Length: 336
Image (cartoon, rainbow, N blue to C red):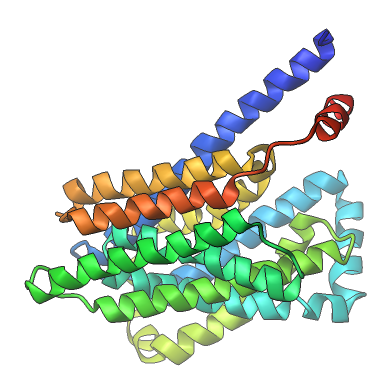
């Protein structure tokens, strides 16, 4: 018999799961659509390299606030920052690798979404599942189940079909953008995302530094890399037009969305199981496809649809957990 306290805990967990589902779905879908709209709308074009830097600034400020809330008062907050960043320089420098990779990845994503429609970008970027799995096996020595290997094969086939569908659009003259550049940028971003994510996970597991403090370190080190990237890539334009050229309320919204999206996912993802996470990603793909038809005149072909369905199936298959044994069920009930 379930006790009232256990029943309350179960209901609370269920509510958090569905809140996680809605949050993950909206975050996954809206980011891609917003980035695509920002890069294709009329008017002065903002510099994507500056938007990446501004997202890191927003992320840094947000994480500093969260660390302050964790510590409870200003003195503990300052001591915590001093201990984690200044007194442990070698530990802080470990975060340099993902800091640099995330800056490059975010710039590549802007290149990708500028050359791929939102639906194709959304589907193609799911290749990060493959690259993350690859680096998890290599770096963390994780083993994958047979169903997960099968899911990765389905993923590759699905994305190949999506890309072939868009190639046929190029040959018919419907699309004038550089699809090869867009796909190459997305593929590179997936590799960087996979490696940086697993590397960051390893750092988190090997130390007792909190997630938010690690993100403070990450943003602090990302900012110099981001600023250097701005001047290397857009130095002449920055001198003529300024850092915030082309910015309006929509770009500021996009910056906050990008910065807050990852942090929101980091907070809610622990409440959602793999099936719900897969459901959220799949819904995001569907939303992106439907929205792209109406917002960007996207042509939904049978080949693209088949590819998207295979990708969605692969997401569910990869996240599917084997049924627990009777021993596992007993231990789970005891934990509740």
